[in-house]
Image 1 (tube, helix red, strand yellow):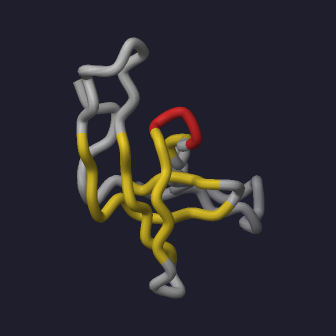
Image 2 (tube, rainbow, N blue to C red):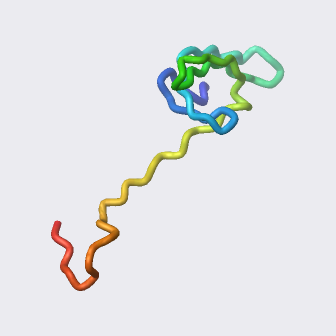
Length: 75
């Protein structure tokens, strides 16, 4: 089973990129998927699954930080 899919955002060496090509390689002794990652500057790099990390989802903070604490928050 593939760890990532085309279009997934990943991190390679601290830089975010997007999967643009993949190949599942299950025939090896140790299954290793292969990917091409494209970065924002359009540079592409070939990597194997062990080198990639998922980009953590960004949390959404819906509260106003600089408001007066005595003021009621409206929904």
